[in-house]
Image (tube, rainbow, N blue to C red):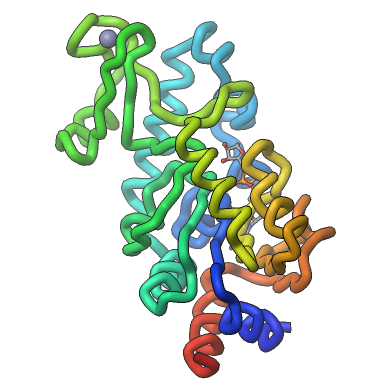
Length: 250
Ligand code: APR
Ligand code: ZN
């Protein structure tokens, strides 16, 4: 199975990766679905919504501060580094992620498409103000603060610059992701339940255009039925092996 996947990847002309929360699980970041996805007995689906934010912005900000803390404690794992390495080798042309944790970037991936935003960016709920907290050096301040963060321009409440359930995805990122999927002759799908759309269209587009789908997951997902190769196991263990195989074949 692994050998077959290695051959497909090594022979590919335009490979892309599509990742979800599972790729960061071994970095200690809780996934959304499954028993590890709970926070104070809430499911992410109950908190990551515009309605929840309207009803109780403090609760939602507490949830995001908790996630930011978890993410700040985390480092990229061998799975993130393997994808960065495949890009350096010229095999992988882009990583399309649903994750907001920045770990692909930390691991060195250059062509990164973030479909669901980034947890280290905030934006104003009433004016165009946006801020990248890593760039402005205010991450710590944000994580440690209590109450509601306010816009320095207009005083309205700030919100995380992430995509919540029921919200549209950033247009440019989605268009770029679809463009890449249409061009790709294979997609490496890693650690996603593959049930959240439109993101989950990505592997389907590749498949429909005749490309191959290789999946890495600890369990079956919404993508498994269209996978040409399903590699069951931890991303951090399987991807480094795949990189070595590809290196041997190129
Ligand atoms: N290696 C590989 N796969 C793993 C690992 C691991 N170590 N650990 C968990 N997984 C798999 C799980 O089996 C599951 O299929 O990762 C997947 C995680 O699924 P979700 O928690 O649903 O995450 P994701 O698919 O990224 O969710 C999509 O939903 O909540 C929204 O916007 C949020 O971007 C997120 C979107
Ligand atoms: Zn504002």
